[in-house]
Every structure is written in structure tokens, then in C-alpha cells.
Amino acid sequence: MIPNKLYKIAVEQNKRLSKYDEAIIAKNVHYAYRYALDVIKGRWIEIEPLLLTSPTYACSYAYEILQRRWPEAEELIINYPTVAWWYALNVIGGRWLDAEKNIAKDPEAAYKYAKFVIRGRWREGEKAAYSSKYFRKLYIVDILRGKSFELSDTQVIELVVV
Image (cartoon, rainbow, N blue to C red; front, side, top):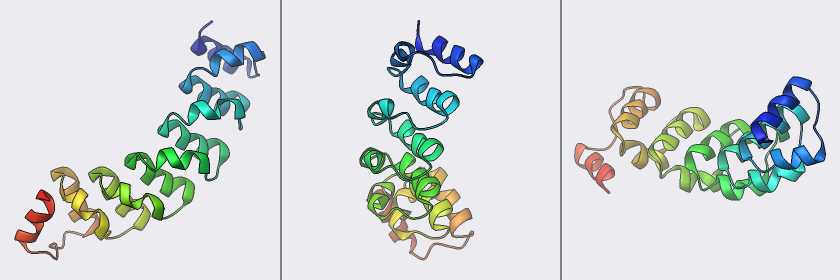
């Protein structure tokens, strides 16, 4: 059988499957994560190496299942700014200083980190936020509250171009 069918059977029966069937599910990151969440309803150590190949699933596993920081996954998550800002907010519950250098390089992550984690201006991420017309506008409206940027127009252009 294939993982999605086995997962569906386990959910319908509301019980764990045989070790053989679980081994099949454990080869697919999506269904392995969903099986741990929906069937086991807890940690499934056997799939953790697989989850460590996907920053999104590793982050979700830490949040939904472990309900705490997952140091082994942080080495992966830190390299994906759009996942790292969310991990900082929802798993760490605040700033993640080790990830800020990478978060500050991505327009979306920098904006969301400033808005949801820092809840205010974050100078380190402004260069990235300003490199995107869309996130620049959101940053000015949501973070700076529509106030004019403190830099001159020339400095803003330099900030965006550099």
C-alpha cells in the first residue's frame, strides 16, 4: 500500500497500524508528520531524521507535537528565513538572535519578524524589507505607522540598491 492510503485507514480506525505499515508511512515526510500528529498524537522518534530534511515539517513538528524548541532542527530551520521567523514567534516565543542575520536577508521574513516578533521597527531587517515594493509598503504602513522614513531619499535608494 501507499502511505496516503495507510494514513487514511489509521485515521478512520483511530489507531496505530502495524510496524510494517508504519515503516511505509515513515518514508513519506508529509504522511509521517500527519500520522504522528493525527494518529499517534505525539512524538514519533523514528521519523525525526526524515523530518530534519524539511524545514517546514521540522518547524511544525516542534510546534504541534514537541511543543518546545527542537535544537536538532534549528540547524536546518535557521537557514530558511520564512520558516525561521515563524519558529521564533510560535516555538521560541520571541526573538531568535542566532537566526536574525538570515531573517534580515529576506523581505517577507524581515517584515513579518519585525511585525509579529519584535512588534516594532527592526533596523537590521529594513534593507531587505525595502528591497521589495510590496513589503516596503507594508513595513511603512504597519511598522513605521505611515511615518516618513528617517533616511533621506538618496539613502533610501542606496539602501534598496545595495
